[in-house]
Every structure is written in structure tokens, then in C-alpha cells.
Image (cartoon, rainbow, N blue to C red):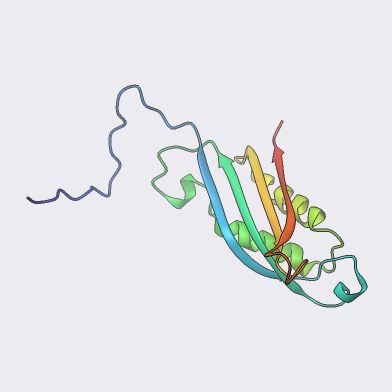
Length: 135
């Protein structure tokens, strides 16, 4: 039995079906940042692991310009880390969420920041997760 290949051009939308949201995500993004409030954290970078979800009311995207490029999430995270020392992971998470919401198409940003070394070796990671929603 032959398998019919899936066409690469857009498929017709079935009657009664419509896409209302695209969720763009990046999971497990590793960056180095100077972050923390303790004396041993000052003046040195440590790893962060990020997870970001963005809701974008885009459907039927056929081209990158039709949707949100998820590479911008990594670029924004690295830019925030490059600004210098940040005391709290909450601050980092909020700055990244605001950077993502700078794109007017983003209606919701969920950012999770993990510090793998925060409670090592007793815990895999510690961190924070925040969600910002556009009014």
C-alpha cells in the first residue's frame, strides 16, 4: 500500500475549523548569566535553563514573516544576561517576558527560569515561572 505524501503547500481548512492561536515555545535554552544575591554568586556567571511559551494569534502561517521567529527568544535572553549582574531570577524572568511582549503580536508570555546549581546537589534545580498577559 503506497503512502500519499503530505503536500508542502497549504491545505484547505476544513469547514467549521479555525485556528485561533499559535503557541511558540523554546524549551531547555541554556545561557550563562551573572545572577544571584549571595556573596559566592557575585562576579561570576552561572548556568540558567529557560523555558518560554508565547501565544500569538497567528494561523495558517506559510512564511517566517507570517509568524514569530522563536530565535528572538534566545537573542532577548542573551541580551538581558549581557546587561550585567541581576539579583533575582524573578527579575530576569520578568525582563524576558517584557522583551517578548515588545512584539505586539504576543498576547501572553510564560517564562520559566531554572538555576541548576542553586540547591545542588540536593535538588535538580530551583527557579521561578511567571506569566504576563497583554491587556
